[in-house]
Every structure is written in structure tokens, then in C-alpha cells.
Image (tube, rainbow, N blue to C red):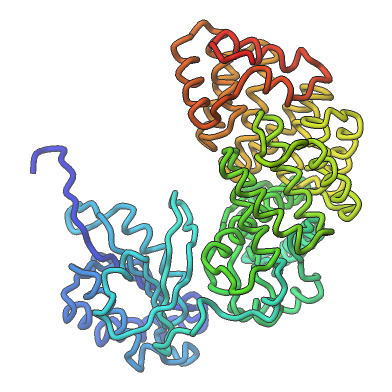
Length: 589
């Protein structure tokens, strides 16, 4: 190997960790260390040797090991987990393991290994049950027909600091997978997802942090209750688990919820750290996790900031999980809610064909539930997308009339729903040209739920077209801060580019437009900003390149069509963009 060359190879990577180790150490340090040493010497290490593996390093109470094949790694894990002493009660100092296994490319550095393959294995380990095994789908594919064990499909999960989702499979300690994909929930008959917010654990020595943690959770429950897209369990139900050692899946079963939000509070001197994580109550998979740092001297401001950040992120994460669940588990009977979930994949796409497919699906949902405000508002949003980008809907003579009908029905049946008010208000401004009414509806939407990210974006759009540009920037930046690169991020990023275009700051407009393109490479208005800003800067080759890309995804688009679909209360806020499109050579009509 030449100097500087990286040595890589494909390996099966296994990470094991002791369940409840910290609690065991606090109870009996000497006995726990003796039990751990005995387990390694009599069970773990001999099994590694028998299955052609090697121990890379010890990680406190855990182990990182490498095997030449996925079959060897899984057979090793099964052998260890099926050994009776490995499943002994932890109260008697028995060592119970969780094991995660991945198959991937690793970087070799002496006796150590590094890389994403190792990181994913480490993230899989906590997703295993106590005494169980969690493997990546690539491992499952490698052991089909070669392992005497049944693994249960755990679905797609997003692992922390891993930029792609990973499909997981689990082996339970009994060795038998459930007949279904996941643990059944009491509330599974209800199509609307449900959430329980558990008391955050105080892992500080100061008892006053207990009240701080409880205050944060109470504020979160209140704020999350404003969302109509999912139900939130009341505080008096979720707080019965305060101070108890729990299994999230058991809590989800007992409360009949699909998702659980949990966390902890730690104080070190004057610094506070809050952690929060959203968990799938059926599988125990972590859907999202984050930590927040602040000062104890600004405890109330910090509490407000944490509440705002967590609440704003939980709703889109539940939405993502629900869409994924619908794709994996299409029900036998065709239900309106399933049509709605399928439609949500088109809600943020801004591609003509997907938009039309979404409208077809949501129309079926509306046929089944004609007074459902959420379904009606979704149709409004999709029609607004078509109208503002100049797309004609086949078979519909008057898109505006259809959109107007859906708006009135949605508002009649969705009073107090922030999403419904925001979508309808935004559409009245951008598409129907009813500026004052639309602006008031968006204002009401913000009052109904100031933490709804879509509503924050709608407020930015409302000010962009009908109000203060400074206020528009405030809302767009708040959305960018709370949820960068998540669902709908292209809206606020393009909105910021639009503001800079109006102000004549074309270089700044390009910065925001490029960020929008990274979030959604098919958003028509983002292309408008890229085309117009480059044309204004006399970068015609670049402008025409983006124009060609736009025409590829939106054939037949013209300046007249865009002008007809855009808000024009203040024409000077759209004309700089239209003029730039003309400069780049977009057809006028």
C-alpha cells in the first residue's frame, strides 16, 4: 500500500451493549464487574472465536467486533443471545445484551476500524430489544435461507447523523417474530396518529431541575395539542410514568398511541442540556433526536426556546413517518386516510405529474369524506400549485372555480385548524387574488398555531405579497432556523431569494435559491429565481441552463402564464423576476 492510500474492506460489524449497566453498577459495582468479566470470558469471547470473528475493542460495557461474513456475525449473535445465562434477570447481576449488526465498507487503521459501516452498527444496537438483535436490511439479504431464526421487519428508520434511512430487521429474545410487522396498539383502529409526551428524566443532582423538566413537558403538551393532524395524550395520563423505568413500546401499548416523545434534563454548573427524541411506539425506533444547550441563568427564555424548537419539528417528523407507514402497509380496504397519506408525497413535490396524481388521490378521499377539512385543504394546496405555475388540469375547465369551492368547504368544516386556515389564506392571496381576506386567514392561522412550520412559511408568503418584506424575512428565517432541509424547506428558502430579487440583491438571491435547489430540485419558483438573478447579473449562459432545466420538468411554461398565476397586489414585487425571465429567453406567451 502506497503512502496516503486508505485500506478498506467489506466486513460484518457487530456492536453489543449491556442492558441497564449504569443501574446495575449503581446498585452493586463489584458484583456487576465480576458478572461482566465472567460473561465475556465464558460466553462472549469463545463464541467470537467459534464464529471466525475478532474483537476490535471494548467500549465500557459494550464491544465492537468484526466478522468475515454476515452469516458468521448473525450466528454468533444468536448463539450468545440464546445462551441461558445471557438472558438472566438483571436484578441478579445476569448480563443481558442488545446487539446491532451491519454489513459495510470499513477503513482499517492498525487494529481498529472506522467508517459509516461501524457508525450504523452502533446506531442499530439501541433499536434491538433487551436480549435481542437488530440488523440492517443488507445483512438480512445476506442471510436469507442460511440462518435458523425469524427476523421481524422493523421498517425504515432514520439513524442519528446518518444521511439516509435504513431498513431494519429484529430478532426477539423468544426467537419468534410476531405475525405482524410491529407490536399492535390499542389505538391502531383510529386513522389519525397519536402521541404521548412522557415526563423528561432529570439526570441532574439538583431537585429544582425536576420542576424545570416538568414545565417543559407541560408546555410541549399544550403546544402540540394545537396540531389537528394528530392526537396528544393528556398530561394526567402520560405523567403516571414519572420516575418509572419503562419500555417505550409498553407505554405505547398501554396508552394506545403510535408515537412517544421522551427526553432528559442535565445540569452542569450554569449550563443546561435538554435532549429530546421521538420514538415509534410500535417498533421502538428513534425517528428523530436532538439536544439543546442553554444557560441556567436564562432558564425561562431557554424553556420557551426548547418548546418552540421541539414542537415545530415533531409535527413534520410524524408526517414523514405516517407517509412511510402508508407506503409500507397499504390496507386491504381503501380508506380515505390512506388516500390522504399517499397524497402527502405530492404535497411538497411541485412536479406536474405528481401534482396531478396527488389531486386524483385526494379527490377519492374527498368522495369518501366530503366534509373533511384536511382533505379539502390538501386539494386546495395542489390546485394552487397548478394555478401559480401555469399548469392546466386535464378535464377541468375552470380550476379557479373548483379551488374556490374547496376553499369555502374547507373553511366551513375546519374552523380553528391552523393548517386549513393557512393553506386557504395562502391560496386566496397567491391564486385567487383575494388579498385582504387571505392575509387575515393567514394571520388567524399563526394565532391558532405559531409552531406549525407550514403556517410559518405561509405567513412569510403572505407578507411577501401583501405586507412587510421585513416581516416576510423574519418568518422565512424562523422556518429556516427551526427546520433546515426538511419537508417544505424549499418554500421559505425560495421566499428569501424572492425578497432579495425585489430588493435588487441578485447575488444574495442566488445564495438562497441554491439552498432551495438543494432541498427540492424540482420547485418551479426556485428556477425562476435562478434564471432571473443570473440574467440580471448578465450571466446568460447560466440563466439559460436553468431555463432549459425548468422547461424539462414544466414544458410550455411562459412568462404570461406565471404572471397570471402570481399575486399582484404590489406588482413591483413580481415584475423584477418576470423581467429577468424574459431576459433569459423564456417565451412571453
